[in-house]
Length: 263
Image 1 (cartoon, rainbow, N blue to C red):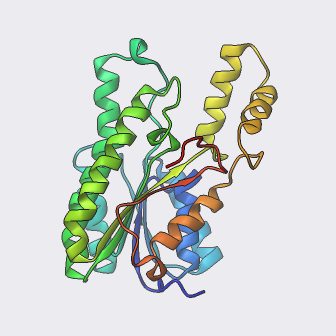
Image 2 (image 1 turned 180 degrees about the vertical axis):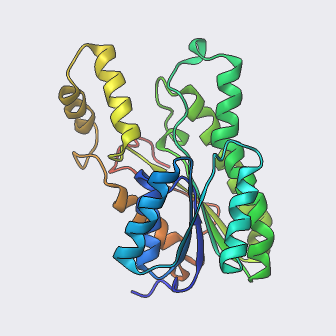
């Protein structure tokens, strides 16, 4: 199936490892040109080299902490400088600190606001005009199953990732006339470093082994296993493609059936 992504310019945030790396690799395999960003320069360059070797894609990188208010615009400027435009934006960020409401102070709320919500807002703001000038584009926000089903102990993630969904739904209406499609993807339990850290914390809190925690968690998933980053990446690649030209304002789960609600 031709996804119509050959030559498209894609900016993928937090793309040195985990979900971001898998998404970038999937887009590269479809012929997209990539702008990758992350805080760790060495890991970022290693990822870019590997993607280039494996796919032959054109890749440029920029080290950036997206919680810095100036960084998102700098990332988009790199896309314009290197490739002359932006067709695809995938917003993504690492998870904020674990904690319930009582454990979180004002500084942690403010930092998570910048890291999770405002990094997406600022990236999108910088990308809209370049997309308009090219006749349209795709924006996909990586959120979490928590926007459908809040996760105990993840107060900051529950609050700010849900805010992204509200922003994106409104933005889809505003940008529809410009042929800019805006969607959200909600990972469930995907095998990443973040999930490992959560499993370790939960195992410690219950005084059980990590393996016991993982077995217990996977029993709750109808498919009986954690998802893989490339499974999420395939969904996002589809949403960025010409094959998804009538999907906007949607929030789509990729969770192996974990979500227990109807919608």
